[in-house]
Length: 311
Length: 277
Image 1 (cartoon, rainbow over the protein chains, first blue to last red):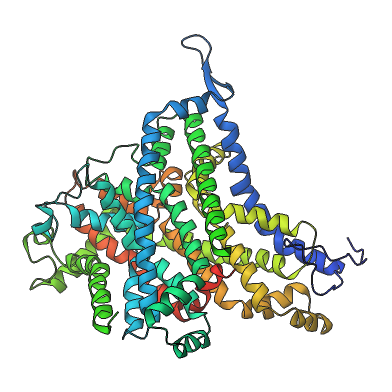
Image 2: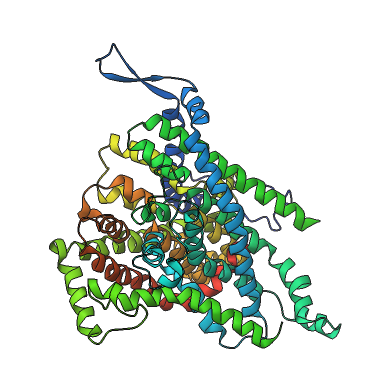
């Protein structure tokens, strides 16, 4: 370990060599090991191993010797995945969250961008108050938010019974959008702050130059600010996609207010329900498919939006 | 857009964001019957004594299990986020400030970890933990919460931008060890990022629902969210729980609001770091 030979600087991901070739000493290499090891070990134990375990579990199937023999796990190949693809309830739940995501994510990010631009504009007074007020719901956990809104939606309990006696937000037709409203309520302020803090990082000289050229506030927002905060919008977009496919706490909690939410309302609820049957192999296969779908969707979204930026 | 229109938009949405929280506060000060029978968004004549009576019931119901839940949440989220932040910061810092073989490979693996949904990990974790007899223990929720790939990502970006290599070389010349330089010099420069990572992780653990839901059976181990969820699903059998759920919900969001307000001046400067290209 105590070898002090200099190693040549490796190329970085972009292929550009490091600007400065500093000697990496043995002490530094030990330091790297010390710094990386704790995270590395935990990451292996609680990320890598579970993923491998889920894949292995999804390939197993339970067999019984005779009718009353003890159950035994044997290698079943892709049997579970066949079942996943034949499981209409699972695919209905996937379709449901995709519909949810296609509507809720753009609405939420659009509002977040609008609020961030207004906070950053010279039009507003009391920006600090608005910032805190809009961000406050982020301090409310999904379960608690769902309980609160569950009361607000309930025809019998709601303080807004003038509205809830006319429109039943907890009916089968509307309950998905009732969930969408809860998710939007919790996360708009959080996304707003991410976009807003990246607006604050733009040097103000850019605006002064544009203003000298006669640009209006709207033109500055549309042509300068929005293009410069695209990376922040992409980041919030990826997190929102991941969040949408993970939906669980809000619908699961709302089930005690509404009978319109089935035990397979979202993919994660389907996983939970299948695991409590218990059919671990099928639940593991659902998890693997879901993780892959999330990964692919986030990745495609990243690539698609980044290409747009560079054009 | 005119000034008036801008203020109008923000005013309307202020109502949207704050009304549910206001309703929660007002309802916490009412008896079970008054929640539906009186003006929903305003207090009753004896709101203050009722509020304290509700609070008393909350902390004594079922042998005071609610206090236990709060303590559990503080342990899972507070200690978990603290340890997790240090671990993520060390890793991100090493990835930013040292050249070593496999650096980009490690970073790419961590980055793809950001995209893996935590709920997809919960079920296999449960199966693994049940084989080593760790389900239904504090560890089952605490240990997995320590891992934050996003924290490593943020720490790397922020360390690369805010810790000058010259400073590290100067510290080396002064004979400071690498670990000492990190803990005494670099962490100070990375402070906004560290606070941001801590908060992200604190909120993520505090809000985590799936992991405790499948790991824990013993209700004295529940975090506060899972406990309130359990109470809420029993309301139809035990109606008196309704008031406790409402007061409990209010009490459970106060620690998060206090944490945010207390750390606000640190995190607001670090929040944008993740979106820097």
